[in-house]
Image (cartoon, rainbow, N blue to C red; front, side, top):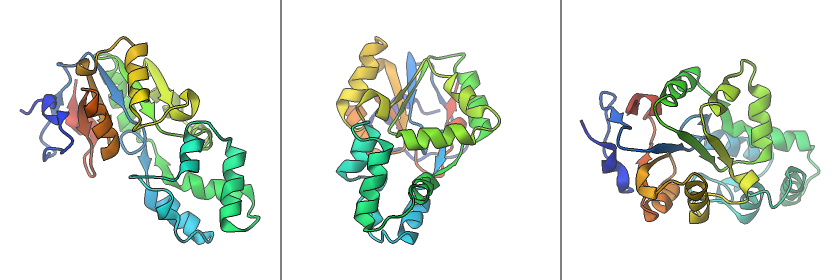
Length: 226
């Protein structure tokens, strides 16, 4: 069996569905949200904005990089209303805010129940933290879609949830990792960070954190064993 310490490099090792990895060497685990726990689709939101006339949307927003005013939204430097206005200006149209919000929320797919149940068991064995680049529009949409309580169940699995739009920092800036570690009195070497974006993995590695770079079609609940 491989040990998770092998994931301290940015390049992920090949995994098969039969390989599982123990969390016993680590004091705590930090999880990304979108693409790790919550299913998302960059393609879906790109297509939605293209249907509104934003044909070069991918040049402004993708998993690998994004323009400054998306950063501003994710760090709370601009309000959702200001973000919508910027989109309207970019498109040169007075599209209703609801259409822009609908396109922006197209990235959000679902929170699988089996991951929530898995996290509930994992949280009995290790302290867990959530660290997500997100924004108030998406958080509101996730909460509204939570018809059976699984979103609240997921949040209850974590000692604390860190949302970029509420702490004023975002990944891959090292300051947000340092903030989470310092606030919870954790040394980088004691922590496993689970993430699906390479640039965030690199940043965490630079601080000395252990990392697991999750890549499709890998399923986090099949890979991590408590």
